[in-house]
Image (cartoon, rainbow, N blue to C red; front, side, top):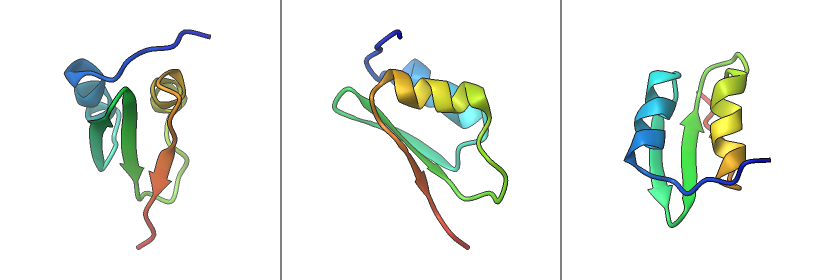
Length: 59
């Protein structure tokens, strides 16, 4: 597995992929997702590569 450090490019990519919010906390990409459907695999991979997780927000 590729381990990446969060940066502005990853934040922009997460937002492009549909994240409600995205930011860096240290080396980790923190993503908020509020839709009912699952996040796309490409977004999940970005988060996993920074050893983080997706925060689910309920309506």
